Length: 188
Image 1 (cartoon, rainbow, N blue to C red):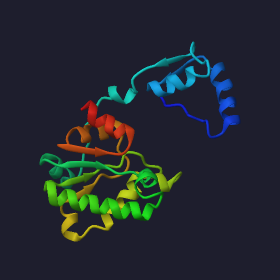
Image 2: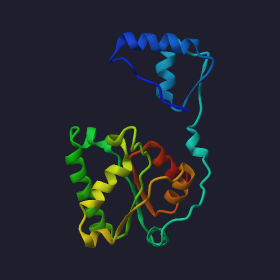
Image 3: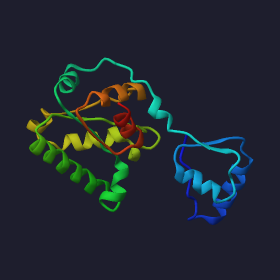
Image 4: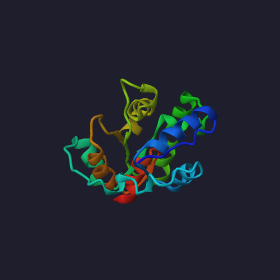
């Protein structure tokens, strides 16, 4: 249930991977781009296309703080921001992306006038802190004013994918960066 490639920036590695993929009994890809990529190298008989398993993930309720429950009971905006977006939004500058994220949150608060729940979806605190949504969003949250913080909350670390699906399904509006966060919104 994954995406594969492309590996064309490293042609030797690409050929090595294609030989490897040809020897695998079954490759399950989640989108036509990966299927077409593998097919282009003659890898066809051991590849099948299936929907991302996240579309079938059952939401599971969990216990949340009173503050977060209050936000979810009202109409709220769920937002998943990822440090990965710095690559596209600010030419790789994480600091500039964090500043832009603060501006986005402020604009949403001013224009839409709904509380915001920051929803980390991918957390890698010990392994890859620079890729950790929660770490990034805590920094963004910390840059807000005290009055803004009264309208914004952030989910704690440690919730399961099923819990996140349940929470995202309870938001009135969702803006997501991570694939599976947006799949949770679409499937709810």
